[in-house]
Image (cartoon, rainbow, N blue to C red):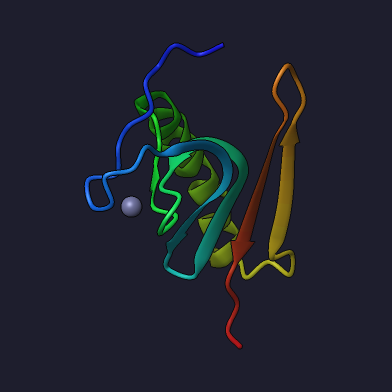
Length: 102
Ligand SMILES: [Zn+2]
């Protein structure tokens, strides 16, 4: 059990809930989606606040995935979506989408 106190939403003055969410990041036609991230969520408007550890991990992962996605964009790869899963004590699934010209 976690002994961490729930942060309070500064706008609604309610305790946030510890929930699974999908993190999404977009840059220059590239979308990176990381499902199953635990985060604090405001029960009213769904505003999320990630813990510093999760933010560090997400930034590192996104930086690496962007390199892969940008290379695919440069060579105009026909493969425009990849799903990467890491098995272990915690299962993570990461999806990258490379935007094409539609
Ligand atoms: Zn709120």
